[in-house]
Amino acid sequence: QVQLVESGGGLVQAGGSLTLSCVTSGGIFTFSAMGWYRQAPGKQRDLVARISSDGATTYADSVKGRFTISRDNAKEMASLQMSSLKPEDEGVYYCSAENRGGRYWGQGTQVTVSS
Image 1: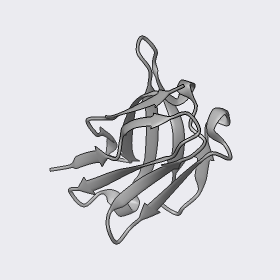
Image 2 (image 1 turned 90 degrees about the horizontal axis):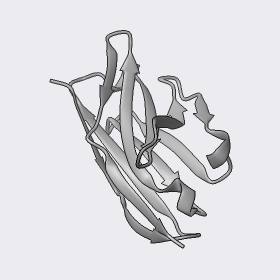
Image 3 (image 1 turned 45 degrees about the vertical axis):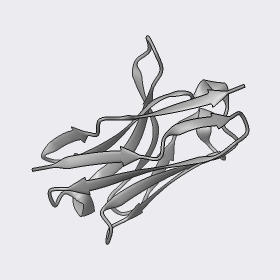
């Protein structure tokens, strides 16, 4: 059974940092592209960062230079290091795993940025 479990969200002041982690189970990690998506209240879920199975990264323009996505195949874990956080970064962050079998989602973790 495939599961994605996020952790690391919380409350942070503007300008601060947080690191989100996503641990997967079910044997899909090494051949999946991993992504982090953000959903603010009343808005759609948007891609924040993505890392392919071979390590190629993609970032939303709004987070370039501030966020870093990484993966650890041995731990079957993807991480999102977030720095210089802004109020507009606030939302529920979802981890996704995408491969030819489909897309899987975690339950989400809340990030709140106080100004």
